[in-house]
Length: 145
Length: 270
Image (cartoon, rainbow over the protein chains, first blue to last red):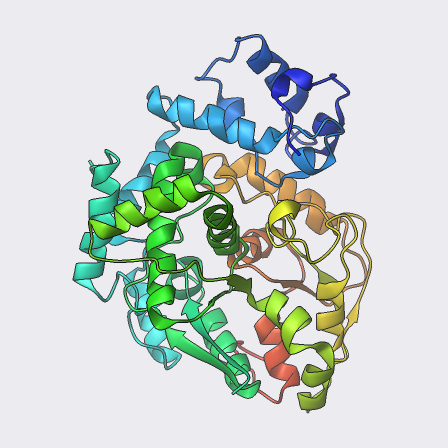
């Protein structure tokens, strides 16, 4: 069972369960409250403080899918052109190589020295497979630029 | 052969920690678990960045990876909590949401692929604990270990609970039991169930914050010889802050199953 964010009773269990909230001023309850009130600033860096550990969502006594709600806000931020630049770089790697974390020469050498294929049998080894991934990405407007 | 899986490598295992790939292949071989290569697989895609940016894209790229396994007629074995978070969650959603399944099938038809059924997605730790079984592993242990181990579960092995269902996420014990099949002892520590701080695109976007979370965790570990992880992302994160060695589960198991340090990609004995 899942309830809407408007059923939040502001108990703060989410904030108390948050691993980021223990080291920076990240207040999950405030995000839910601001979202309810239509007061989310999509450029606020703190939207990206969530590690998606799901503690808030699992422990919410009102069964609100809080982590999923934060992911939804991030999607709005991305579409509004307010994603963080290192994250855009990761998307670029995915388009360029099929991997969010692509291989490099040093690791390719290490693979060979371990007795593994120098490149893994993934999009790194199959150009047509990479082309398929690119077509899916480009269909969603990701150009890799 | 006990069971054959389509073997999903992901990104960090083959492209940053090939020693963990080597150890995992060694353990599957020793336990007679069949692995079929998923030629042309991509990133799962990464739940932190890609799921945050565009869920439609996340479903479609994950759907392509699922279709590769469906073409082989296998379930998928993953080695990473992040890959598990994406592929397991997407597989569960596609089973209960015909609209999303249709969307993924339409997308696959544009690249000449199909998804006749939705394969199950299994984390190697899940398979060893709940399918292969502790007794069967114990029978094959030839070099029992004596280390004290700080066990780290990571988040997405356990949550979201609605798509897991094999255990309590608040106080799980299965991974400790798996570690203890090797003869090693799992030692308690205060932040055992805490996040490593890497996920959700926090490490890639805000590294200082992410490492602060990891430091809090690592600092609470007392009386352990090493940390054991089920995930290369947690692994990378904890390696950066831990004063004791960080070992991946198949490295630990590989040693107990009679492997040399070289077999499991380690520079020396535990």
